[in-house]
Length: 244
Image (cartoon, rainbow, N blue to C red; front, side, top):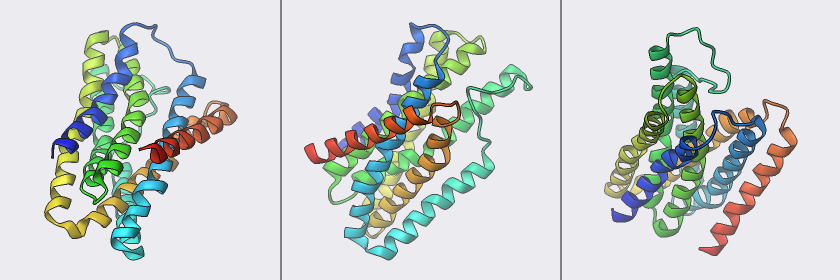
């Protein structure tokens, strides 16, 4: 339990860590750097899914456990995507009143973070928890950092103070701690759920990669640079996987 608590807290608070630069820098971020960060995160999550979550799910539960769990992860993310509006933080229009728009974006980001917390918690419940759990927590944390920066940047552009924007961005990631502990508790009590949970985490991460991170990193004419960043992210996670 101590490991999952530390891992989930560090992963979740990476959202706030990503927002730290907003306290000191100007209210701008080039599209190129934004796309590079998103694509790098996508590469990290892809390698974590393909080299840690999916192999462990296959080893502990077999092919059909992988299929069922992965399909469940994709289904839940699809349902979430259909019920929670997707908001492009770089191109949000000002048609809503400030308070309504800000609350909508904060709620949407927080809800989208819930499956990521589950992924971390389930990973720590596997037989190879010390390795897989730490790697998945790192992968999710690295993905959370640019997200936290963009949330804080948006809030500052809506005339919210820098410190307040930083705290709100941090809180949107903190919801992952609760779902991480929930995922760990369920799969620890019911060991048969572990392979399904690992596959669920892989499905959720693959959905986020292909539906969110890759399209957003290719939307401003930086496709080639983003592709390189994606590959570097994959190699970075493979290096970590082989080193620890």
